[in-house]
Image (cartoon, rainbow, N blue to C red; front, side):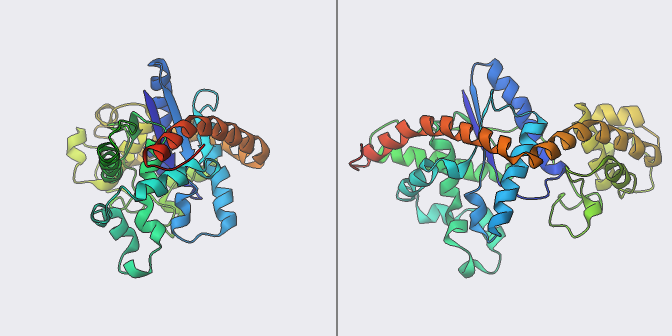
Length: 336
């Protein structure tokens, strides 16, 4: 079993990033290790180039995401942690797979349509083609499982289609078709000011999100001021289905406490959110405070973080090299 997944280096990491991805990966790390498998997590800095960003911002965000992952529990001695650009085989395999993937397949990718919007003709080729790089990211390591959210399942299906076509075209079994690993516990965290919208760094209101670098007072204040309705807690999780703000706060509490939403609702049933929100604030401070402190320490010590990424990249490159060479040879290229 080999689990492979990546995260784009975006600044201002928030609670949604932590609960929706990083915390899940920490749990998977332990599970995969117990099963005798291997976990690989990378910072997808090549994917960050598909839309314009200041070069310095990409560099800083790469360190920030790496620090957050290590501070949260991703152990570079137990998992392979690296930044994508340090392993050129990702780019090399992506070019080879571009000649296997079909234009019609990419035209069906809904995320390109969403991200490009009305300016499709002005979007970069990288934004259009990045699902092929995503396929290369996992096929390169013969990943057996890939943690994905619902919005990424289409891209994993593309990776499987590319692997199938490559193997048929070149009469080989080199490329493994990875299975999706969708954690039912991975919550969808919404804005603290409008629970119909995802928690996002792009929201102009800083009160809408909990940043991983927020101090204890800021975390507590944001939760105490989080929007909710005037009704008390319902009698069951199901009773909150039409109350997005209440549902969001319970979701966050449950995810931080490693409890089920039903269990949380049962404890606070009938109580007002005036008492629930301070309890949530205290829980968040207790859980996020140590992560923030270690993350801030690591961000200030870029040398040690960079050393871990470099070591991880060396391990990843050694795993990637044989597969890339075999794919090149299968396609008739004279290498080595």
